[in-house]
Image (tube, rainbow, N blue to C red; front, side, top):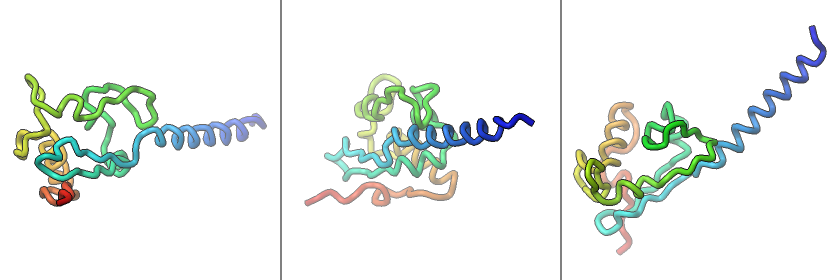
Length: 129
């Protein structure tokens, strides 16, 4: 057996582990969505927790093919497309559970996986009075 094989293997494992840590650090741990504050309080979205539970980044970031946790790809905020209704693009300003893209995607996933909030006040913080 080649004497360098164990050293190479340990080096490769170390580099892979460090790369994973560095790359995962580029994605935000938490996101506050407050663009619909006129109707509802902000939503604090635990991005890091969701990164652990979804199969792929494109599950949510559906317009960014090939996105990975450590990718240096530019990622538009959800509200850059979904803030106001455009042809074929639903608006997050809709309070309806079937028309608001966040309500539709998030709540349906939470119900399907039988965990996660499904009611308004579970996600939306009370607005400051």
